[in-house]
Image (tube, rainbow, N blue to C red):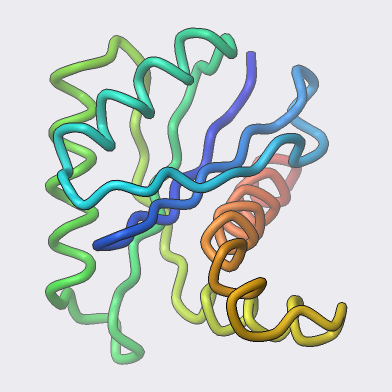
Length: 137
C-alpha cells in the first residue's frame, strides 16, 4: 500500500506518493486547478490508480497552533475526499513546509518560474517524508 501526501493550494496542489514499502517518497507532481471538487476528484483518481491506502493532507496550522483559513480549507478538502474515496484521509501538521520547500529549491539553484512550477510538489514530498518518519517511530 502506498501513501499519498497533499499540499493543497488555491491555484496549485502538490501531490507526492510513496513507494509500496512506505520507505521513500516516489513520484511528485502538481495539479493546476482552482476548483476544490476537481482537485479532489483528480486526487481520488490517482490514489485509486496507484494503490494508495492513506491520503495525508498538509494541515497548515498557525505558528501558535490555532486554526486559520488555510487549515480550514484543508479540513474541507479532507471531508470532500472522505466522501469521494474509500481511502483513509489524515490531516498532518505541516507548519513551515512551504518555506522549507523554497529553501530546498534555492539550494539546488531553482529560481523564479522554475521554482514556482515545482515548489508545491516539493512541499508535498516533505509532508510525505515527515509522515513516513513518524510511522517508522
